[in-house]
Image 1 (cartoon, one colour):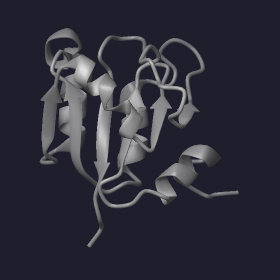
Image 2 (spheres, helix red, strand yellow):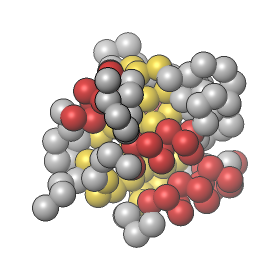
Image 3 (cartoon, helix red, strand yellow):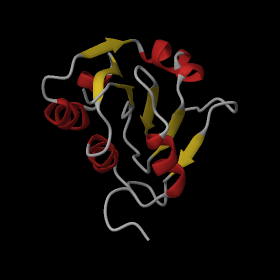
Length: 131
């Protein structure tokens, strides 16, 4: 058994196989996920696990060189936006319309579905390199 870090085997495998510039999505419970995209469903109940906690766990294990959020997020879900901004620090962030973010989903390596039940709690993370 792993001693620390992400214990979910599907999520651990996704992270271990990321290459430079690969995209993953951390999503709220309501984001429509295309059937052809790998779905790692962590949702247990409304709010569990929360979006921010899943982002923290991912950022502990993945080098992230960029992020994309819906332009609607700052106005419609300020708490998640502010938390995400703090977690990402100086990592470059891009805002796109929510419809454009959804249109990008077929390009992601996987969508990690959380139990978050607040609007626009979604982020695309672009994998970087550790050197």
